[in-house]
Length: 161
Image (cartoon, rainbow, N blue to C red; front, side, top):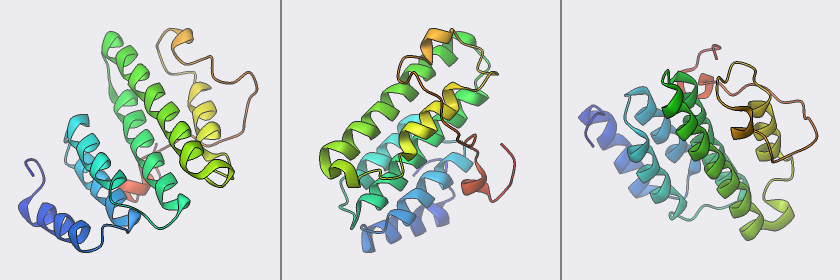
C-alpha cells in the first residue's frame, strides 16, 4: 500500500487476512491510513473491504461506520478551500446517511441502540466553525442532542480535537 510504511501496511494486511472478523483491526487500519495522510479513496477502499469481511455483531459494524464518518469529518475540518469543504460536507452527509440506513436495514433496532449515529450527526451539525452554507448541514433533525465533538483522539491517542 503506497503511503504507509511497508512494515505497517504488511502488518495490517496480515492481520486483516488472518482475522477479518475483528473490527478493531480494520478501524486501526483506517486510522493508520489517516495518520499517513492517505486520501479518502484509499480509506474508502479499506472500509469497503472491511464491510465485506463479515463481523460478529452489530456493534462491530457500528464502530467501523463511526470510524469512517469521523475520518471524513476530520478531512472536512482540515479543508481550507470553501468549495472543496462544501463538497466534502455532501460526502460526509451521504456517508452518515448510508451508515444509518445500513445499520437499520441489517440490524433494525439493535443496530444502533444508543443512537450514536444520529447524536454524532447532530453534534457535528451544531458546530459553529463550519464555514459552509447552513443548508448544507441542516435538514436531518429538528431537535437538538447533546453529543461530543468528534476528534482524532481514537486514532492518535491525543486529547485534541
